[in-house]
Image (cartoon, rainbow over all chains, first blue to last red):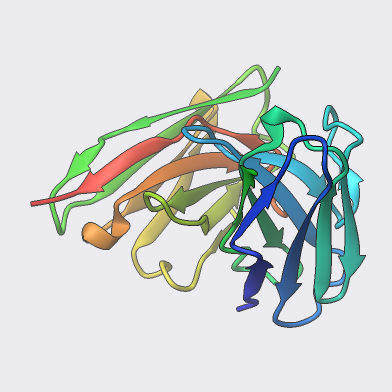
Length: 108
Length: 115
């Protein structure tokens, strides 16, 4: 099973600033990585798949990069609605699909 | 647009069987994998398993001995059964569409296991 490790656990950023979230896989997963956003009481929402492709309707301020074992989600200019928990997920080596433990993005 | 609506018992006793159903509206089961993911309160996401219209299933090895995912094409639904539940199975359970990444999610059902 591939273990996904996200860092940091909590990230405090001011609105308008850039946020950079990291995700590391325990072995190479190519570009088979997705990012999700989850707000309290809601189901996760798919933001990015294929490490860098934005889902329809996701604003351009969200971007994903990386391949192999190191991945990054960047939010270029934080809006109030972006403060949430973010999860990475690998689907290279399945079953099982595995998720990171999440990064909580909070307002500084 | 395609939506997922899920339901099932929210309170179980230890050793009982969890049973949830997810209905697909405004769309077909064909051409996709349909699955279940769970999230213990305040914790991260755990993939449970998936099924397609042909009945092909994949399960998380950690749950495989207790899980059955099935499909009811006549009602455009699929279901999850998890037997011999314990308190560790207390979670919000989500149904979702997608074999690799999950682009469409149900609203979630909190299932609590308590004596």
